[in-house]
Image (cartoon, rainbow over all chains, first blue to last red; front, top):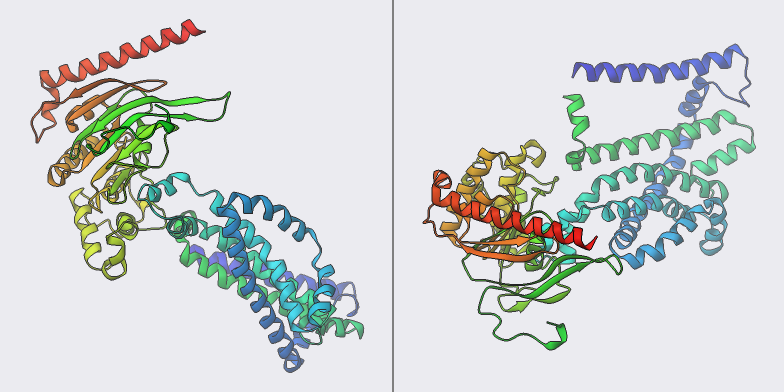
Length: 257
Length: 283
């Protein structure tokens, strides 16, 4: 326990140290605000402009969460399909890899063409970008389920659904949660890409507007807000992961006891 | 006997009937014959031990009977039906405990009740009352009182194997299939579990097929010992075990018992050397 606290303290000190060095270097080399603003300045701008920033942050968060939620639903559905059926695996896998190789910036104009600018293309971009790691992880988890564990249920004449529900999905849960942590941050990326291209709200749009008027500290405060939201959600899912898949994380349990 | 010849006559008198059932793995030219056509009848309530060297198709027979595998030739009837009848409840314990790591020991033991009818229909209603008590009662019978809330990895190998045995028994199976369940245990734990298994069998009288390579184990537990030869497996001998029940571990050191296991050993060794000679001649 004591060791745990000192670990947290030292990592916090290092993070604060990182910002301090940034601050000191900016002052020492006299770097202009337009190139790289000082952290103190960024936080100050964030504080002063908070009432104006908040609606943008809420918009981005909302879009991201909706996109992420759909990404999870579709990702799990497709992942289960691919992981359970040979034919689905053979057809969908190359398609998915091909689709994932397309830069999502290139897709945004198509979404805008179909649905107009604003929230809808941002949600769609967020879905398409966050879905992939979930699909791959769920499919991998299912495909690598030990046949011995499935035999336990097969010998009881269980249905295919029984086996999926009682063995396949729980076995896949650690893979699934690992992919959620990647997916939530990717989901932010998708939203912001779309907002910068085609929206008049959201952090992405705010950053575009600020950079066109050379308000670089404001651009950076947008980045910081994104980073902060990303960290918060990542931590939330880590917490849920630890609660639900503790059986797969025995090693870390031993390390902290 | 080819499939298209139709179903052989007088099937279904016995609980389990293998009619020239064989299994071939892989594709030509890399065929592996796991079990050469074997015929076998096992009556209701009998306790059969299948013994023989490793790779003789003992486990294949279990998998055929349980329906995990289908024969590539011949027939396997369970309760008069190919592929097994729904009303025959099967309990199976494997060589490894194969407990699901995300469930507690009690949840693992209760798993068949969640899957197998008629318990399945009552699962939601009884999982916290009757079924739970049932699992705890069985766990205490194998000496795992108080371990219900532990996770499998918190138990030793022997304890996991006991839990796995409970899982095979919880739904009162009419057919119990045991695939070397005690193979990985030390001798004292193994003998303890023999006694437990014998008393459970005397109590409920399910039909049991026990696969083992331990001749003492087979003679202590079974009513009938079927000796198999290696690669491809075929039945060498079918031996009734005359000793009265309940048997004790001490009985396994009596001359008549030792004579029986010694004779079986001789059969297996002779078959093995014959096999090797054949292989050499072929090469």
